[in-house]
Length: 331
View (cartoon, rainbow, N blue to C red):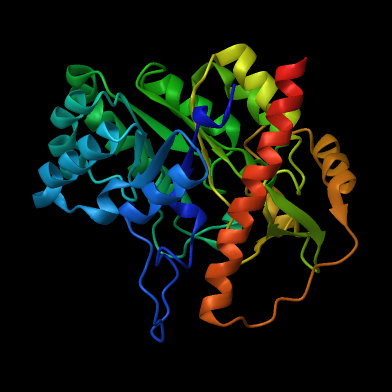
């Protein structure tokens, strides 16, 4: 395995790519061409980006041509969807065979307040969102079968590994699969090992993310960091993935700019997961093992420094991955 088996995900650049809104922004946002440039600069094998963020339903054909252009330059392309929009997906699917794409990353749309850090108790519409999501996936199943495309649900700090497996099993284990965001595992009462062990048979896409874990008043806080400098044992994870899966699509996706709070000290956090069988003591032991004493202070940073930091964290991540892959390949 080498860096050529790893892509660059535009979500690594929450600020640079414009996913974080700043009305006072001066610098141009990172676009798909800029992402391609960075992937080539660091000798990565491909790119991953949210297709519907850049191309609306009337511009799908234009987006497909962009994918062909990137592929002709020697990079692979994996696409994500920001919204589980049935109409949009139905329009998109017939195009995908022309660019050899048979798996697309999705996430569950939330209703009302967006949930991060597994804090489902803060939303009174979570169950409604899950029900609607399952309905959408069921409605899409005939079209997915027709065009032989699978949808890979990301663990987006909202659904537990057990729930993801149940959704897949209840609809189609071949066509409703999983995007494993490794760094997100800890936010939903999982370790990377426990998440992987439950879901490995349906993992078809992987986001390489890492977080530093620190204590907060409400539980833990997940703080963005380069890959290999947080709580994830990447040597162990990558060995498992390559041994059991061959080479699935993997992309570097650095964590959120804003630290994610996981309110694991709140009884309501656990009550919202009471329908799931979780070894709470094992999870808390894992958290304790990787938690630092206190959270760093986050000072307000000017635009150019945020972008500079995002690019530096990519460079450090690539450097760390080179070392880890070298160790794995020497075994």
